[in-house]
Image 1 (cartoon, helix red, strand yellow):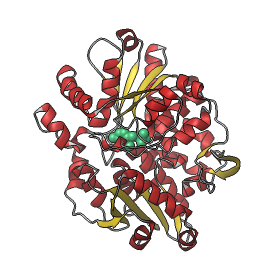
Image 2: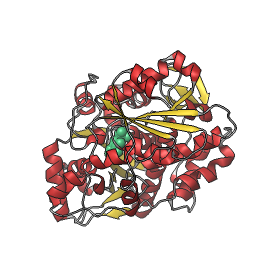
Image 3: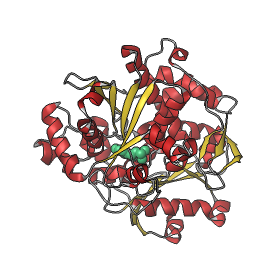
Length: 431
Ligand SMILES: *Cc1c(COP(=O)(O)O)cnc(C)c1O
């Protein structure tokens, strides 16, 4: 399968090239040239995510140099559990726990899959590859963990100083070796702008091979679609009904994977996107006017995005605003409502939400009873609450136990370089 730019269908690339480039040369984002058609029956009796993923991914990998490696890539990347945990209370609602990977957030799926692909593509190349990644908190840690120690690959992580949680910062700065962490005096949008500027800099591109591991990379979206395949088939086989998802959203990479899975034919019903106080998308769906704006800081910081990159892919699939409004709905949840929801659901369901996941739980709680009953509903739990103890623990009145893999990372020494938000400073800080 070939992938084309959202800005020009004539600008096409193989999967391998799209993975390595991240962004298309014309500044657009890669999307599949055409979507395959897959329905429930195509997956036979496979049940687990690693068993289902090769069937879903095969059409995208067909004819690519990586095609023969797909089974090994899937086995290597998806080597942690993905529980679907029912919530008590009568309605059919469960939690898709996407936080059991090495850095305890859903970003591990995309990062580990991309690393497995890129490492194989890099094997025969002479020049090292430099991966630039801007992070609002979780991406950078996941990418650093996935690429740490891989030969021929350097990783440079940019994060907004003071705007990620202390534990996220530890995960961003605990690596060393082939991973360089840059603490940028600016916001996530500044970090993203710097990465885009680096790609546009011809002199830099002549000196080194650059790639991006942000959620703009199609190599992160495809693996994310696999857990929607897994969870939708599980609910559909159990009930005979399509499964609706509520997805905490920022740059829209997570939910775009669900939109694609549904478009391809998986039994997915409603897709509800939840946001924090960064309301660019809810306002757009309400008004029809696309007004990106600077991000504002919230306690769900990995969703602090004012100009979500993947909107370009969403609008590529649904260019008409009315059509887009029919495809997805959006709910904005402010910090006070996030805090209340963490407190309430701890008591009501015995569940501890991270601040991001709490936006999904809050949207669900706001539904009319009839809509809640029209499940199955699945809340995407995007991070483990132990990543945000300073927010969560005062609300639930007790410590959140730290998963062992996360505890090991938090003990490593810190290595970080502080830079101003300028391209010159970024270039000077490259290895
Ligand atoms: C990245 C992230 C999000 C937002 O996901 P997008 O793909 O950017 O929409 C939500 N929650 C957590 C915990 C995240 O790390």
